Image 1: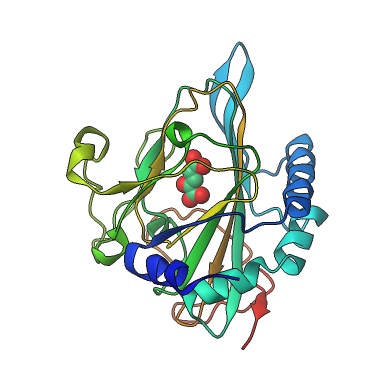
Image 2: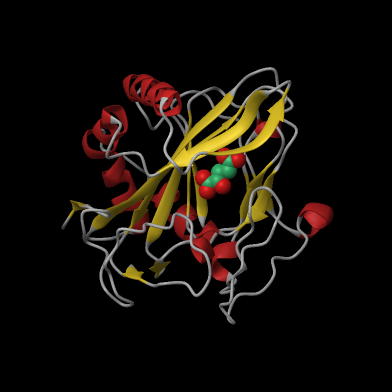
Length: 264
Ligand SMILES: O=C(O)CCC(=O)C(=O)O
């Protein structure tokens, strides 16, 4: 499904654009799922911005067990195989799905951040696949710092609405001010048609501009882990929190929460 160039880019840059990788039938399935999701959101739904009392930037996550369309996509579309090839892993576990919606003219940026310090996962074999459910122009699509997964730095998590997490991990440092120094970094972004996606590592630094367009920007991010992934309980707040988990530090993730999608 993927070219060697795709796989190399993912490994070298920590991010790769995947043109026309998702069949339109699956995009429709996810659009249907997102509609159902926000008719009946989970306790994790967050609203970051409102205009005239209408929510215009919001998200929700960890709903695949309740939304048949998400489950169908994750288990039956071949997306886990794409993750396997990118990670060059024998095994693939689902980590979770995350839906972010920026309605037209949402003014808030998604701040620059690194996902891994929010997550209860150690290791380098991992991958998020961001799949837009609307066409997205380059000037409103997510931005990634090329090669930032190889900086070997762990940055304090950033809350999307500005406040810092109460994080006590000594090994985490503050993320640099990327927004005001964009010329110092090699920043990658793309225009997306329906069916395009971008895959990136949990440690790749990314953010997204405000949605200055006249169109919605719905995105389904699905996240996977591979061979070397183990559980770690962060010292501070984690997102998602996965309160039901009974894993201990160093355990492999295989569990009802993180089902094994491919085992060899
Ligand atoms: O959609 C966005 O604005 C950001 C997406 C993101 O941060 C992610 O999927 O990890």
